[in-house]
Image (cartoon, rainbow, N blue to C red; front, top):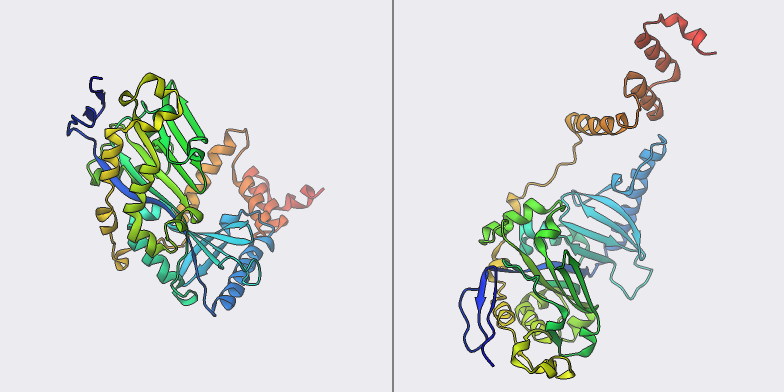
Length: 395
């Protein structure tokens, strides 16, 4: 059988016996990290204070009959401001004002099989600070209520690739365990692969068009700046290959904590690439392609290249000194208020609502800032009527 040559943007390769060196640029990393904190004996007092802050913050709105959303409710933890997200699965969830991290807290007397503090590191934090800096940052915020032990619950190990991988399809993949490839999902756009899922929790491969995902994302500029640092262009195709692994899967590799993960992440990624393989179907007969013998096909040279390229040295080397970090200041300025009201005014004006002094006088009444009599005086002044007409207006 003649060697198969696969050509697409950034790559020109032959089979494993004759491989070109024209491979794409890649960036290895850790895209998602969830873990618990083990709490210490000071946690119960902290949790009681947190609930008091939450209640006080809500009452500020409720006492003035002001409608609010969860994110309007703020609490302070070790001089860091967090926005309330709501309750889920027995935890009160909060997002750091800088959107670097989400944290959940629960009553220590409920569901004692779980630790009291859950942490979800957000991509904005990972790609802004670097993973090691972000871990240290979160450690510092909660140092007074934790022991330092961080049992891991989920990690997504990923690699960005400067290439168009839309030529992949589910028939080109085989797995060590049949249950992985028995759960397959393709999402295509205009006859072009956009996303491919293989497997399900606790172990899943996700491959997708990163540029398409970023098109309407608030992280777009952050990510393109990050790519540029590593020589990946926003003008060319970018795909992401990531393995989502949950605690049950990680424990089978004796990975229990965040420290365990960081020590074994490269080996774990390479193992995952062996567990689910992209194969070169030209290395087996047509009969085998449509049979259970498809797994006998050679691993595709590109898959082998990606597997060998996964190195975390540069990713973990990004370590911003926390003294240089400028935290968001929670001071709502007049300029910000005016800007938000301009957006609101444009929105309601398009619905034939008149935004004028009378409109804002009614808003001030709703806030309890002025009384009804004051409002009538303002209304009459705007209409060019004398203030003594207020008595007649009351009827």
